[in-house]
Length: 301
Ligand code: A3P
Image 1: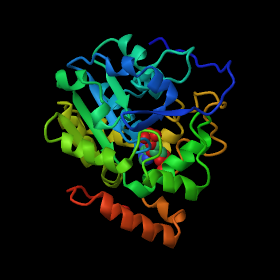
Image 2: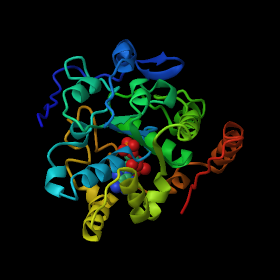
Image 3: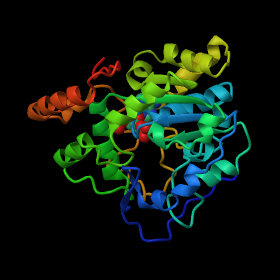
C-alpha cells in the first residue's frame, strides 16, 4: 500500500464550517461535495458508518483483523486512515481526498464515513453494499467529541464544555445532529444491508458483538483467532498500537498532549463532565428529540 506521508508544510488553522442540505460539514468538504456525492461504490465495498466518536476506529480495527484472519502484522501495514479511506474527508488541498484514496484502492475495499444516512452517496444503495453502523450513547459521545475538538487542531474551536454541549444538543456541530444521525440510520437498517451495533454492547461483550460482525461478513474464524482479535482490539492494546492510535498524524494536526485520541474508551465517563443541572436539561431535551424512536441506549454498564 502506498502510504502518503502527511507532512504539514502549510499553516494549520481550524476549518471553516459550511453546510450541505442543512448539515454542518467542513467548508473543504462542502466545496467538493459534488465529488463525494458522485462517489462510485462497488458491490463488494464494506462501509463502516458512525457518528463521529462512536467507536469508528475500534470497529475499523476489528473488521481489518477479521478480513486478515487475525494477522496482526498485516493489520500494521499502514495507519487506520490509509487502510480504510474516509470517503468524504479533505484534510488539505495538497493531499489526496478520501474519495480519491478509495478510488485508487483495489477491491474489496473497506471504507469509512460519518455522513448522516441522507447524505450517503447514492451508489452505496444502488450497489446494495454492506454497511456496519455503530452508535454510542449521546452523553459519552459528546464528551469524546468535545475532547477531540480540543486535540484536533483543524476542527472548529469547541469553546467551553458548556458551549460545546449546547451546540451538540442543537445539532450545530460537524456532521450535524447526533439524534437525527442515529435515528436516520436506525430506520435505514430495515431497508438495506446494515448491521446496527452499539459501542456499549461491544464494550460489554466483545466476543458476542464480533461474532455478529463475522456473521454479517459471512466469515468463519477458529476460536483462537477470535480470541486474538478480542485481545488485539481491546482499548489498552489499541492505545499502544501506532497504526491504530492516530499518533502517525503530525502533532500540528492531532495534539495528543492536549488529549490523546485513545482517551478513555469507557462507558459512563460523561458523569465526570455533566453537572446535575446539565444532566437534567439534557435528559429533558433528549426525551423530546428521541420521542417515538424504538432506539434505546445505555449510558452505563
Ligand atoms: P473516548 O474519547 O471516550 O475515549 P472514533 O474512532 O469514532 O473517533 O471514536 C473514538 C472513541 O472511541 C474514543 O473514545 C476512543 O478512546 C474510543 N476507542 C477507540 N478504540 C477503542 C477500543 N478498542 N475500545 C474502546 N473504546 C475505543
